[in-house]
Length: 264
Ligand code: NAD
View 1 (cartoon, rainbow, N blue to C red):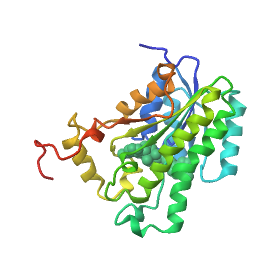
View 2 (view 1 turned 180 degrees about the horizontal axis):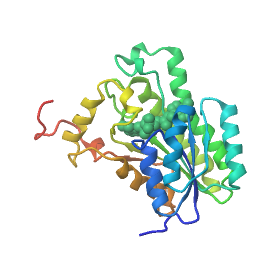
View 3 (view 1 turned 135 degrees about the horizontal axis):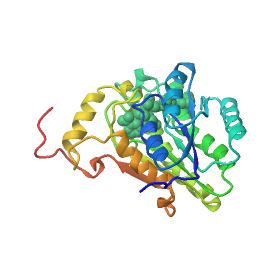
View 4 (view 1 turned 60 degrees about the vertical axis):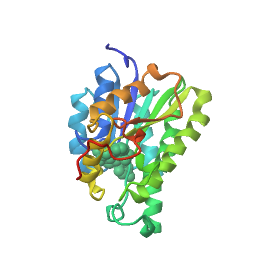
């Protein structure tokens, strides 16, 4: 199967390096013929993002800090100077002060609560509004979430609350943008070792627990996420919107420790 994304143009937001979930999705889309543009946050990341974009044949690479609405407007103006329309967007962005991604949720500070909500949840709304204006023929918007939105995961804390807001935003955005044939969905990915994940307390334990207790008895990879991302961004999922789809080796259906899982 090739050419699924032929003629489609997509913006990838949230690429940090070749471990990023956004990289798995970008590779899968490019392999099917998509043309891609990339944003990066801050100059330090440009050095990593530009060569990766070039590997996928893209020279459209520009900065965007989603916490700053002027910056976001400028980024979309830059995109418009290259493309007059857009078919899809990947929003793979989350951030919280790592000192609050350990210990107790009850200790969350107001400043970090607001910052985490802004960058990790509101930014999808802000991106969707600007992207929709470039989607006259419809489109697909995809974000990334985690099971910590549904159930308590130790240390995930305020990020779990932000992901819950993100998942509900997916539903409200799907309803608002549906009449324009713009679909909005989320992938709830299992734990994967990335730069963002390294900020979460005891992340190695979470990885091991998921590996031993998920139905598939393994962790997912960015290529697993890429394959499912391709489905959401292509016309294969043309009838699907407002969905939170688990790509987690089935972990979310399990209610207790597996009998064959050793103690860790
Ligand atoms: P990553 O570190 O590779 O990507 C996170 C990205 O967020 C980075 O590119 C960073 O630059 C960007 N970002 C942070 N603040 C920003 C801002 N103000 N403006 C613009 N960009 C900003 O890590 P990742 O794990 O690939 O994370 C991508 C998404 O996947 C996040 O939403 C994360 O919560 C989600 N996710 C990750 C996992 C996991 O286990 N790694 C599991 C489920 C969901």
